[in-house]
Image (cartoon, rainbow, N blue to C red):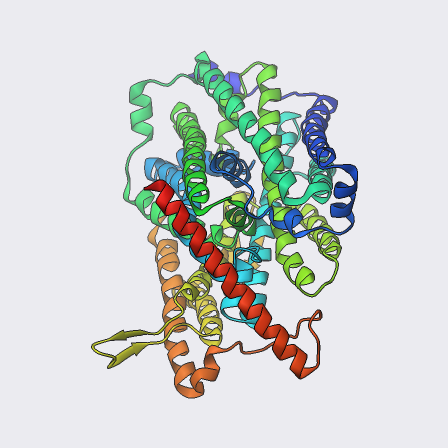
Length: 592
């Protein structure tokens, strides 16, 4: 044991220039694959998409079969953050198996939910014109709900980018022997984050969503190959061996882990349904059947990868329990204990793997942000290139915020809880007809836009009230002491301190956050139903219409022409729905 711990003191020493070489090689290869794909389309078509992106550029609607979707869901859904999040579950004994399994399956569960929800939303949005769940909010409710969902989706995807850039920058700093906490490495980590953003933005600008899906196939295969290599190398290293007794003593099935399981499932599913990069793949599926199989298989691949990293955290904890229990070593860095003693060649392999993971996630998020912003631009006959400028702003802000080195799990918890406030108000919208019980004596009204908006606000209020009940007044990083938030919004972070300054245990180790994640969506959903009923009771049929309407710029202003155009649009939407139903029926016949 003593010799093993002494070995662990050996620092990582990948040369800085060599690390940059890996970074540029991986991102450059991805860029060249994209350029090759663009050139295959023909120079004129490619130039047209770059100057004025088409619908296909942004949605790749109805193009891909399930094997491509499976690899795309797997590669885009995982990110460099898995090297922190999953091992941390395994390296905290109170969470152990329940935490690892919860994180692993919950990370895939959003895709499994979409196997059912995706076709419904695609049909209601209009398979021939929809982009994402943001479009569903506009079609089903109206402009105000659309703007609210847009803000929440952009916030979630922005936080995801920050987490990705924070992780990949810190990984590079670790492998070249720099601190991930001190100011001495901030310039280096900021450069790494900026390089990732520049490359991914460049190739998504060249070819849009098709580029992201094309690179996902390459990245998915690369990820699987390198994970298998790392698994064999790390677990066959003599210094990483643990006895069966050591492993059993360090792991278990504990109640706190079960609470974390529930929290993770609700949190991650809520957030996944606001990930517009994933929704793009729903609309890119060739058929509902391809989407369902692709997301189901991709989800299983995600679960296996997450389990791999989680078990690695368990093994690291079993090797040196005392150091982790006394915080001499930190759970989210546990996997680096196993990689440290590998020959330097494997450190390069790890950098290649994590750079690939980061690029696959960041390019998906950039495309997702672009789809949210471009939908209205296309609809109003404006250039989608404006969205590219907005994405640049998002990316600059993300690089700056990544330099502040927020802990990854609390970042995701904050975004997840925001999404949980609105997930039911939004997706209760698939229910669009009143429900009658006992011969019509009891009528439950379908959600209205006003009811859904009040439901979202009720969800936010529920979080603040939970924080007040739990006596939470500030959020502080337990490892560095950095204050993230003070006041009523502190509870969103999940790492919380009481008003007297004493800390709670880790958020995922107890029932408080679990109860919050159960209560918040239920309060939001209940408020949506209750206030929708009141809205219809007070406003009649007018309540079922959008609360506010913003005219489309491409439609005529003359009332007679406007009515004619509206009728044509409605007929076109009905025709699209009939065509979709016909295609679905043909698919069902083929399956049977």
